[in-house]
Amino acid sequence: MSTLSIGALHAEPGAKTRGTVPADLGALSADIPLTLVNGAHPGPRVLITAGVHGGEFTGIDAATRLAALLEPGEVHGQVIVCPVANPPAVYRGRLGISPLDGVNINRVFPGDSDGGPTDRLAAWLFTNLVDAADAYVDLHSGGIDEVLKDFVGYRLTGDPELDARTADMAGALGIEDVIFGMNAEGGNSHAAAARQGVPAILVETGQLGERDADTARRLVESLYGVLGRLGVLDTKPQDGRTVRAWVWAAGVTAETTGLWYPEFTAGDDVTEGQVLGRVIDPADGQEHKVLSPAAGRIFYGMRGLTVAPGAELAAIAAPAPRDPDH
Image (tube, rainbow, N blue to C red; front, top):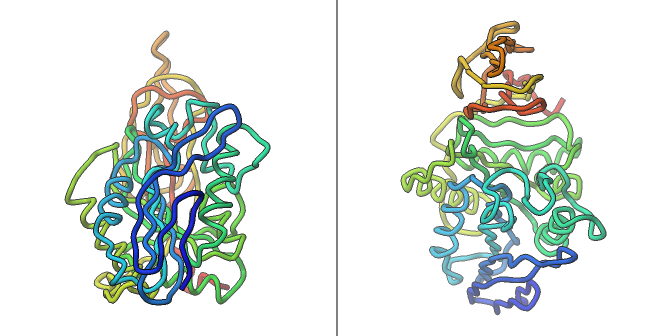
């Protein structure tokens, strides 16, 4: 058993330490809050992050609750909890993009230590937290203008052993809808981690920037299920529900500036060509219909009134093939 160290923060075997570690972002720095739980028994190192985006409060709340509850004497291995991975976006922006440079950090992982502030933060998180992890759970929520149906996401890598371990983690949460991507491309945290051989899942719970204690407590129970499945805690996975597997089918974005009037909510099933809503030009009242490009189920969508070109209006998934690994 060795000391668990992140920057100047240390936890000896059988101890828990809480504090912040500065991340160098170039012209400025960000204090990253961390809880290090170094178990009294050997086991894997598990990383749990939240607050990658601003305005997503359920994950932040649940991660903070979990950090307070974990006791080193009950832990096999090490658990690192980072409840606010992107302080500028969480505290100053409350949106998906950072107020420092307008960049969505969950599009640039694993980052660039020589890039702008958000790229540097992404690189810091990977170098200091993700790279040494044996498993990674990234907690997200529906933002302040986003409806969302709870789901778990992960990416297929083509490595059967890695994909099976990741799928096992996803199933241990007790969340019935699991959506997987057919490859590990892109700048999302879990995709970048998967490319580096780390089993990683995305957990989406809660919506509209709500802070609901019951939802946060249920998410903590789900996290206990994952930690149990990984052998970190003597708890049982949340296996009460049958997992429904999905693949992403289409994303819908705004093509014009205006006022958005959706005609769906998260969880609705839609057909290809169905009207999802309308964007109205407030200047002349002209109406632009938004049609579904594919059949499937809407797992999250825009609920804000004002949109600009490129704004994400809805994300649609379709039922997965019976064997997602082939």
